[in-house]
Length: 188
Image (cartoon, rainbow, N blue to C red; front, side):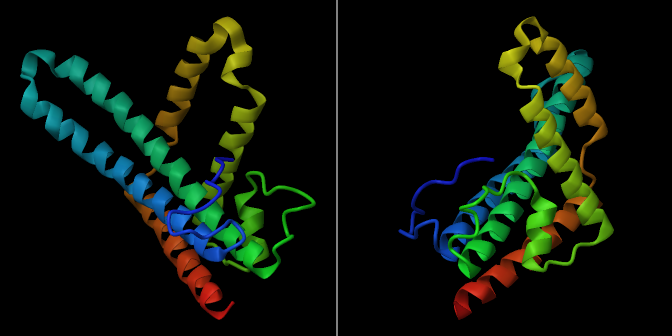
């Protein structure tokens, strides 16, 4: 899991739901920037170069688009996870003392009482699976297999790109969870 800072810019500590709301907001903003960059990169590059470089540019922009799409997916899932963590800490500050949250985003949301659509659940389970694979097969432990792993990861990422509909489903889950966390923080 990405480690949040120890104190948010507005001075809240990790024991405050406001801290987690701010961290999630920053992650979501960054996710949106990667999604927007993904959509704009092809058109911008076409304006700079002519048709002679079209094949190489197409391949390069496709690869960049895949990576930006995947980055969006990871960042929005972390934002969702941070909101759930904040809600659980707000309810019980010692909730994670026996065991850290890990990457069980679906379980965290279920513990918060969040109802997910089957599509949202599936998208989050796929993210959890990606985190598990990354932990099991750390790049530094592969020695000469780094390039092969990068190529395999890229091929899997192409198959795993979010559609606009899937992005909308994750955005809707984020907005619902954020509104719930804000209400919880206002009453707490």
